[in-house]
Image (cartoon, rainbow, N blue to C red; front, top):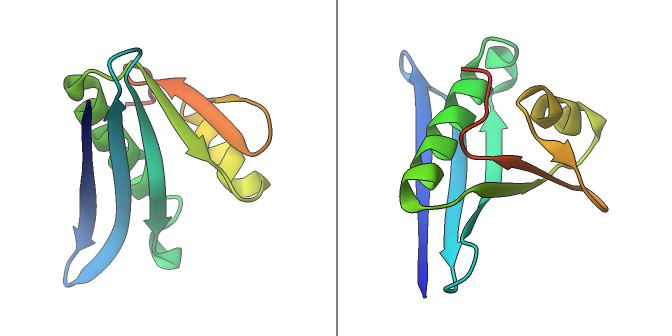
Length: 104
């Protein structure tokens, strides 16, 4: 069994622009990743900060061995962001996407 978590941070000047927390899980069969949190400062939204953080996290998860990433989106704005990034809707608030897919 392997588990790991990593936090990625984006800084603009002296301010925190955004953060994403990813978790890798491998119980010996079909390892996967999850996006635990993705938060971008309101003044930085729409500037590519979230996409860059998501791409970095997905790259790390792919390197760890995950082929699939899950994320729970609260609200349609967040769900739409993930769909634009290559994720697909699942049951309930969950969406999923492959680690090698993205906008960048």
